[in-house]
Amino acid sequence: MSTHSRRRKISEKQSEESSDDENYVPYIPIKQRKKAQLQNVELRLGRAAALIKEEEEAIKQSTSEGSEASDREDGEDSEEDEEEEETQGVGERSHISLLDQHSELKKKAEAKKETAREKLLKEEERILESVAEKTALMGVAELAKGIQYQEAIKTGWLPPRCIRELSEARHARLRKKMHILVEGHDLPPPIANFKEMKFPKAILNGLKKKGITKPTPIQIQGIPAVLLGRDMIGIAFTGSGKTLVFTLPIIMFSLEQEKRLPFIKGEGPYGLIICPSRELARQTHEIIQYYSQCLADDGFPMLRCGLCIGGVSVKEQLEVIKAGIHILVATTGRLMDMLNKKMITLDVCRYLAMDEADRMIDMGFEEDVRTIFSYFKSQRQTLLFSATMPKKIQNFARSALVKPVTVNVGRAGAASLDVIQEVEYVKQEAKMMYLLECLQKTAPPVLIFAEKKQDVDAIHEYLLLKGVEAVAVHGGKDQEERTRSIDQFKHAKKDVLVATDVASKGLDFPDIQHVINYDMPEDIENYVHRIGRTGRCGKTGIATTFINKTVEESILLDLKHLLIEAKQNCPPFLAGMTSESEKYLDIGGEIGCSYCGGLGHRISDCPKLEALQTKQAQNIGRRDYLANNSADW
Ligand code: AMP
Image 1 (tube, rainbow, N blue to C red):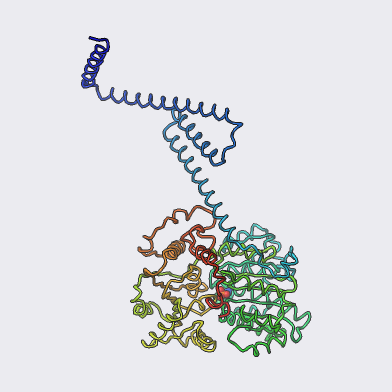
Image 2 (cartoon, rainbow, N blue to C red; image 1 turned 135 degrees about the vertical axis):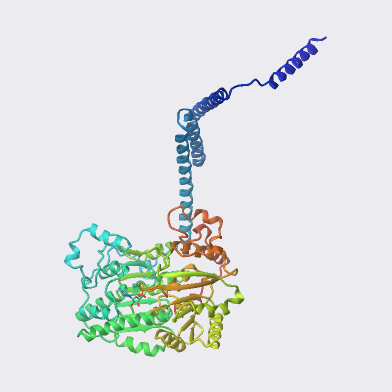
């Protein structure tokens, strides 16, 4: 037998023996078995730790050797660092209890998450920057000459001594109590009653007659800021009393000017208020007329307020303007036209307020705003107000302001908490019929919104056929009919108003019981504006919204999160909706999308931004805001 085969035989024999050995399992008492197991685990852990320590040392050595050649990418470095940290952690495990190890690993996982979150936030900032307007929101002449104002305009108003003597801590407490968030330099003090704002008795009585006795939060902080001459961004939910924040101060400033030097023919306006719709302009004009009359009745000079909106004869408007006006309320289309034709000048205008400003600046409309700005001959006080103000617009708007104060009551774009929001799944073909049933939910007045003019007409016709006292308003109707319909509805002569979004912004209808969204608007901001027509000034209202398969998923997600935020009932079909992007919603920074303000997605998934970019890529040009929306509708 060769040595070779002999060796094989021996090894075969040995392996047979050993397999026999393995098959033999002697009895070991359970206590002993457990002890042996425990020792085994400890041994393994110890060995693992030793192995890892060895590896760790090897890594350390190699990194110190290669430190001169460490021109690697930052990302790689940090990844290795992380790995190193991890191995260190495991190495220490043999000495640390399992509980401590667990909490340590958890901390590390959280730190990792933190960096992922930071990366995402940075990425979002980059997106926001890339879509930001490169040119400041200033007049052409100011831009060309590089004029930049450093200080806010000075006014003759000062807070009363009793307020000035209060500590900053007390102001902070009041703001906290009233849920007022305020940002900016040298913050003006909040003032919790109209008397201390130093309004004349005539105004205080006028307010009282309207049932207004105590200022609302936006007024508490906003009015002192405006009276002090500060530029301001005011963000407050619809129906929160924003209008008085910019109308009362301009009335006071105009009065001061008139007393100093009466306005002569052709002079003025001293203050300009721009609104996104004719109806809102008309309403604001009425408010100014009311308080001016209150003053005149008490022996003050009568202030003249002009109205410059489309659909009304220019001749009539010109007559008022020619007499010399203190204040002008306007929509942009007609205003630009009259400025262009030199029928109006802004030579002595020192005060500019834009209501529902984000809607006007949004989507390429800023060129018109710039054009209007360029007619100003010197520094002005600028105020921008809205219920919805996405960060993109806030940033851009700031370029028009000097040391602005931002007053925020509730999240920008949040829905009023006084509205009970109900969302119902209604099939497209069943909507009209269901509308009648829905009208039974409350007593009139009821507002019905639809996106398309044809739908407004169809609903109006259907309701009339069914004997409902309804009127309708949309951009296709002539001005006279629109004004008549709004008046009839406002004065409770009609029960239902059917309208496009044109009636959704800023219009103040008293005591609307119910807002019905016949369809879901494409922008969540428009939804907020629509439902804000009810639940005004502390009263509760209902908003019913019809949705079905035709509604885009992203807007439904925005709606879902808006309902959750406002602690409303979220129907199961909405609650059950999820998307990839929802995972990132609470990563910090701005809540939801910083571009459009939607809560159901982040800027990286914004459908509005995507649509805009596609449009830009196709070079279609800027949207005809006037035709689509309501700047001068
Ligand atoms: P606005 O948000 O400015 O459109 O105001 C909505 C409604 O609230 C209007 O009917 C105002 O007359 C009313 N209002 C404004 N300020 C107050 C206040 N301080 N107290 C009670 N009602 C107010």
